[in-house]
Length: 507
Ligand code: SF4
Ligand code: SF4
Image (cartoon, rainbow, N blue to C red; front, side, top):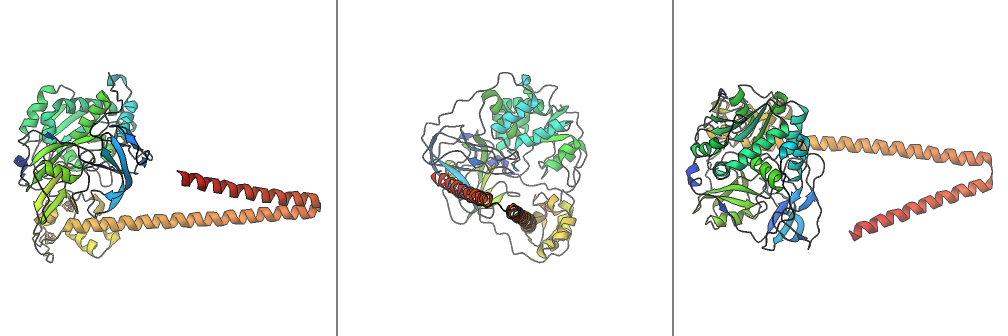
């Protein structure tokens, strides 16, 4: 089946998987919720700009917010109904922040807008195909939420040696990719071929874990010489981009570098399925598979509309909210704890994990045992990063490659002193980003201030010169005309400003 040699990466953990809780039953199509909450930013990059007004009727698949720039994506209505609100709502975020969202009240009809697929995508040039993925709002469904077209475009600018479709679902409890492959293998394989055409890669691998035999059996009959299926060892975090590249090629992505610098593009299986829908049917990304699992009556995988509240998904699996439980979006290692169940499922949500409130044990001083460094898959020095995070030593944190940390949680997992190391790294990253942002903003406003001063000086000089010229010419009529013209210009400017303000108010 596979001619690719398997390599290993440093560290990692063998974890209890708890996959059988949810992957033995077929997925359930979740019924329509009573509201759909669509954040304007579900991807890395700029949030989209709303195109609709409160009270407006929209249809499933309609673009309701347009992308703002190249690294941005449109937002589509995921069902038909009325726009109920545009405002700040809780979104999946560890800090519990609110973000701009469009809220739809479903009309229960789930009526599609007119959509059209492509008969033969091989006749399309790669860039047109990439644009179709962008217009369908496809971002990576594996977690980071990078707009798919950006990764693909890099592929046409740099030659792509290898396309990897990542079917490695290495975090415990999560089985949505496993179920997706078992139920829709044809979508995955067809979507993989479409991405292959969009990046013109020389070689293509679908990488899958050894412990997913049913998924392997579903894919194998659909493959040909153009796609190789490679089984990789079940070790956490095998599914992380850089670790999987190391396993498949033996090469490390250089610090600060990207896979494309090595001629590699990677996408998740969910992205491949979304690519298939976008191209062959013209469907934008409006739904996804998610795992709902943990301490609930019926753990299961659901097919849900993007924007469905977490509470509605959990209820489909027999759960009713209890105090004393933790709601985690994602897996137990990399997931984020959310404050309430009103937050919506977004494009990157792959799991809702409900656990009894964790007794994490009391945090104790570091005993310098070195366990954390042994398991770190990026070969960082987690203990050092911990000290520098505590002392907010940003320079040292950068020197010790804090931003290379993939927040896999292996170090926290093995720490005998119960130190929530990843928590410290996240805070430190946030601090550094905020500081860098305020430095950029300060230098930008200083630059604007200096430019403004320069302009004022220039205008003053120009005015003085004109008045002097008039005085020299000594012609009273010309002077009068000059003053009259200046007054007229000032008045016209004021009227224009008032008109703009009035237009904005009307909008
Ligand atoms: S595992 Fe914990 S106690 Fe051991 S060196 Fe790392 S931070 Fe310190
Ligand atoms: S969370 Fe970061 S520092 Fe800790 S093991 Fe993972 S990559 Fe290394």
